Length: 285
Image (cartoon, rainbow, N blue to C red; front, side, top):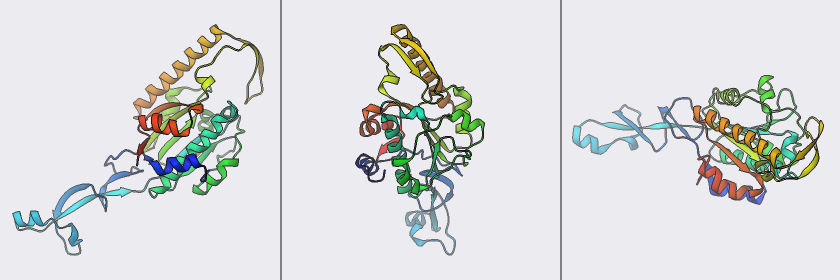
């Protein structure tokens, strides 16, 4: 995925929209309470032998006859966890969801690495425990199978993934599985310095059209059912989808996490420029 031309364009154009809050211990392109070499001024203190003379404020010396040193907030290297749904449900739409998931994961990982971070890629599949991928995992994304039959809620219930404290946590899934949005988002936000939640759907999943009588097959469980996909069935589905999205958005707001729904067919470049920048997840570099 490193050589994907669209991914390369995203990495060249954008930066992660990380919060710049002076909270100690937080990760990402963030500022801590300690002092360091960033360009954001923190405070003055008296000059001590051994201090970098370049940080002496000569204007303050002229006013007070005391040598004062400018202190700057420390920069904290980003730790980023990218949890991406690698279940069979992400293969719908002739694979467009899986392709965009790979592209988004590769883009986020390379943007993190570009500012000195070491991203961890966590494919949510049926491995127990989940096997994490380091930066070298970007090269494996192209051939990584999306064959899981479980879901994110089950992964968390089974403690199958080890989430690190103080990480910027990015979650990519369709969220079309049984779960309690409040419980799920609280668990994802626990211990994270920042949480970004991305729902990825196909165009038909976002706005289905009538199909008439169909045999529906659960792509993960294999169960089959005959269903009339008519206006009434679609209205019920869209009502449930809207309720799910509303609850996810509300719970994300409670933990100060952006939530955005992406339609895969719109393509990586458009989604990054319009939706992810609009949500503050990306910004123009």
